[in-house]
Image (cartoon, rainbow, N blue to C red):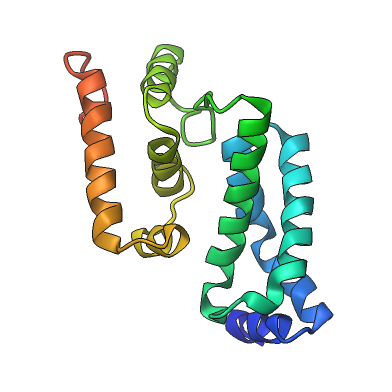
Length: 172
């Protein structure tokens, strides 16, 4: 049974299919939670809450081919709520992708990311740290792909201006 069929059955009320759907996307959901919350315990709690919320609303999944996108949106909403509640929306910029950067570059990247709005930070994290495709970001945000592209371009320009003269991020 393929992913779309699993999502279709889950949306139809099949509990085994729902469990299978969550298993299929567990890793991506955990990566998303870790990117936002920066703490394994909090990420696991977010996964648990996302599973609960998805189970309650699975009947509202309109397009089974977007099940992963739908689940990630639930996760992002939960994480943003937690960050607002905990007042710790400042990102530390640490992930597997930035682990190869030296300490100074990591510090500068953290500093640059912290100057962005929460929406801009989310866009950068989804695109470059979670490798979410532009069409999927558009579906998650419920905006046109062109809008995602223009926001991404503007955000990257802001980051570039932060690094002007430092010789960093010329490849962005």
